[in-house]
Image (cartoon, rainbow, N blue to C red):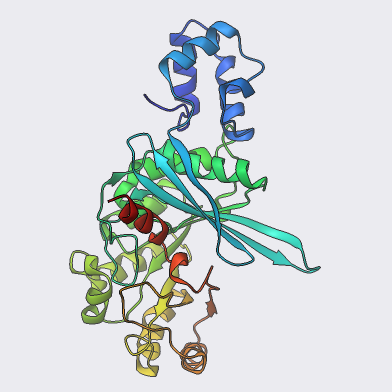
Length: 352
């Protein structure tokens, strides 16, 4: 049965009219979904009983159920595990950022998944280890935010598409979810509060920036400055080689005048040398791109290691001397449970 979450304004209006009710009822339904974040039909108070009855007959309220309550990943992050209506598992993360005075929260960010599993199969990520199953619907993407907001009691200020899956390989459903997040009848979230991360689906990047009017932040997983190493880390690089990706990003930068951020996971002895940093700077500087440096987060059964602090700082200093801005992204946790996709993979394996 289809879920109400994921309805757009146009779809909601068509629905209530088809059921014989005035169009203004659509606004009430959308308010309950995207402003009040309801998870139970009994929470709805201002709809006629006969309309509510028709909705209950034709729709499930939610497509997800919380499989496991929040798993703490340190002081600022929690991971949530959900089960879909067809029995699959997916996960999301709530990341809290603090500012002075201590305890005052600045941002509450939900990291959402866009697919069940991941077709990209980055070798340093757990998301693809269980295989790719299917795309998530816009409703399933939105519900991750709704469930976490409701269960945590937090006001969600930011959303990042950095969980399981490659968002641009689920293009239309992700675009629909973004419409819901930014629309006045939806979450009313500013586009600059939302970031989409892609491994570099070359034929979709320019279209994505145009479809979203450049309002959504774009982050590209680079992870290596040369095709040979990048293909080892990101097998999708063989499908979308680095030269074509960089040409597309150049077009985005020159034609649409949009900033780009590169994500770069530092892995000891693989992509963390001074020569690597110089090559990365050569890629980033012409695009005026910023580097988001991510210390490798250990995953069980993978023998790679996180570089030493000295090695990582040398990498950053080399970038800075080349005129490239960079920051370190703080890991949500240093154990294997913090790895993207690990909680879902562990639970799935226990059920086999």
